[in-house]
Image (cartoon, rainbow, N blue to C red; front, side, top):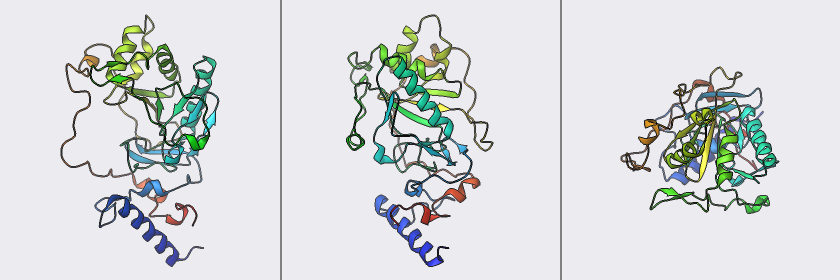
Length: 298
């Protein structure tokens, strides 16, 4: 049994760590109902897997780690400790890796998934909170690398920022095929790409276009694509998004996103959005409830 004193010490350490990183003079979770120090938790919770809440306001119970290496893929920047997910996501990534390998396309590089227990990330994303999101880099030129050589890797954009056109030396039929393979799993709810990439897919998809419905334009996403799985059957507290509209999305829906209609990367004015209010079911997974389980080397 861990004493109340020891719990208090570790909780204080967690507050100090977050405040030191943010420059705050008060707890980083002040004004919210949940701490935001989810990145301090180093291990998944025990018990059955459940995605809880929404993709941008939730958490993950019973998550599992994606092995850092597998057939057709490698995890990049593993030091960020974001290679966890619902078992369905881990299975999806491994299956996509096998399909990519079978197609002779080399390695896909797996970026951010979720933290061990999901929750808000301390930087980089608003979503990726319930273990059903994964970023997959568009660059396919990396060989298999030792784990210690992957933390300083950079994503490479396929978009020319001056012309807002694809860089043809970086965008090939291989990226096209990987994206199409990524849509073939029925668990996929949507895949986010830069609007210019969606336009390229629309132009060259041919007669079979149903898969394009899953490819959704979104700002950024010019150096990776973002796969989001639907809520699994074992997760009744998971909040599904609205169903996608019918059609391939290559009409006015897409042109409204293109540079001549609206800016590709809008500037964000004002204060950052408040920390999300998480479902009550996330409380027992949070560092505040079990700080001693979240700090490594204690």
